[in-house]
Figure (cartoon, rainbow, N blue to C red):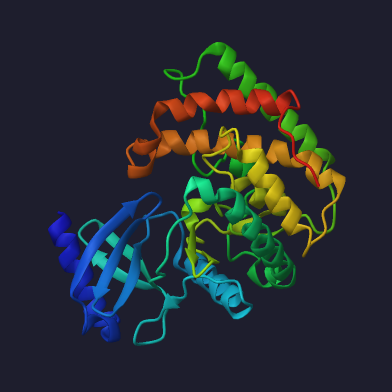
Length: 325
């Protein structure tokens, strides 16, 4: 099946992207999570190709994502630019035996993902990037209404959550269940009290180290597949995705906040609610873990990561997750 899919991709690239196809040497699989990603080797040039998971986003939503990427790049936020087909489309369709699959191709970014020992420096740089991105988002968000999903409480950890339920009876004990439910009630309460004119807009929603490439000491942000309308502070919380349990994470986030404040204002209400957005994100990722348990990345996490979630949530409820302006 993989060989057949590779043949389909090869023919599709040569047909729809002839500038790439005529120099295409080979295609190699990179990873699978929400989507499948491949590297196109064209000798001196390389590209990344994304096969969209069927049903996750519509063609119009992906086109809006790629337009967001282009706008940010035009305004000096470094991203991987999308590549258009010969007819000028940035999303194409490959017909596969199981149904049509949406395809996007991006320029390849040479560089490295940050290693944990570099996280303090990287989160500091990320604060500048994210603050600038949120300023840009304020002016362009109205153009993206109805073109990208909205991630509110219901879509993040409510009844209609994007990745399903965090609760699986075989994995969650009664005390653990009660802890998460108590935290969800507290998150709802805090969100009900959180108001402001500049707290919600178009965000990346997954700007963590694995979606950052360091190139010539600059950060390049990749994988905008989950970009959505949500709280700006949730975007900050999401930068710690899968790392919330690390004892150094508050140092990294404090460094991010320090630099974020040099380009964008925050107030005490923003700071006070941030730990609860971190708890909400971790609960969302618990659901992600179960819904993607056979993915490459979930397998690297192991169930130990899931168990660490309860300590994160307990610390936040106890006020032990210390962040400062």
